[in-house]
Length: 62
Image (cartoon, rainbow, N blue to C red; front, side, top):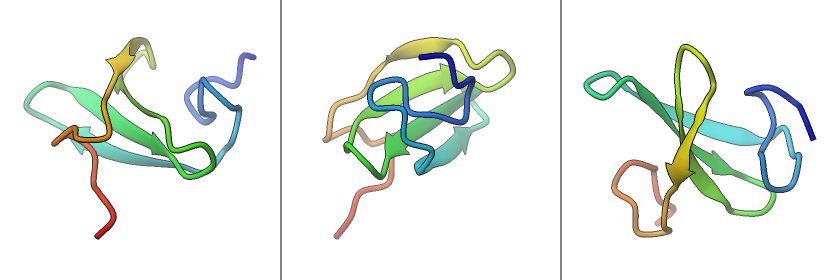
């Protein structure tokens, strides 16, 4: 599944929320479809790891 930086790498959904963290130059991402969370490099889109649901880097629903 190669959708570039627009798609969720887990389910392929295009409904992805992104929060840019300038201090570490990462996009912290959360999929609206499957709920997966991950971090990727802003410039290259390279996957940098999967975040947990308790991650402080992604916005949480209240």
